[in-house]
Image (cartoon, rainbow, N blue to C red; front, side, top):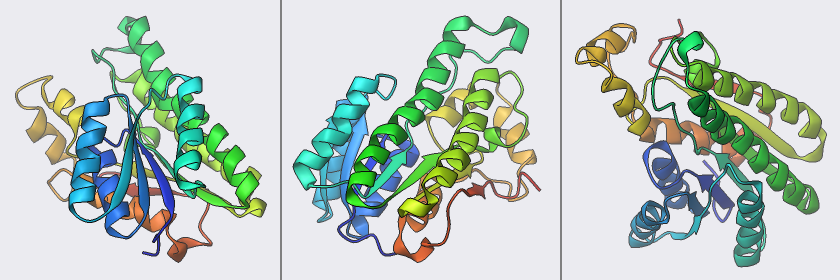
Amino acid sequence: MEVKNKITIVTGGGSGIGAATAKLFAQHGAKVVVADINLESATETVAAITKAGGEAIALKTNVAKHEQVQEMVQQTVAHFGQLNVLVNNAGLGPKEMKKTGDYELDDWDIVIKVNQTGVFYGMKYALQQMMKQGGGVIVNIASLAGLKASVNNISYAASKFAVVGMTKAAALEYASKNIRINAVCPGYTESALLDQLLAARPDMETILKAHIPMRRFGQPEEIAEAVVWLASDTTKFITGQTIVLDGGTQL
């Protein structure tokens, strides 16, 4: 996977899939900006990267605020000179999973703001920079919940279906501009979001694994492999696609 010296932003890079992705990019020679609303966790990811011999910086960024996303891109370019890859990974789930009629308005608002609008902000400002440079790659982290029904989780499903649609729309717009935009759709993957889901009831882990043909959850590093592959020069003819990593759940 050829990403050496590519300047890469990973949002939500302080933990889970984001941290695994940031570390894998650095392992393959990319220079990484680890952006996260939690600066401490972003700094921990950067420390792990630098300890392993990579190059990275941490930026405190709330993707729900467009000014901060714009500043994230500006600071990246100011520090490294350009932006080659953006991974829109930052995301969250609702505080409470409820049926649509009982869903909390606050949960709807924050999930849509971060998961959907935050991805739009990231693409908007990254695309402006990539157009100036003459090219780039964006990888959006969607979800299996963006491809099939997800009960008691209307805001998350709506946001992830939107990410898939936005990926395809933007990919079509910029395909002739040397800018590729793809998405990955993880199934149940070891993360804070999964921990929150498992806490809903004692037998939830057994229930979920029963629906996964591989009978296990995905690992953040496995998702990271697909992200880095899509961002690499190996995949120059791939754009507007959604790569599903779910252990066969969708079959």
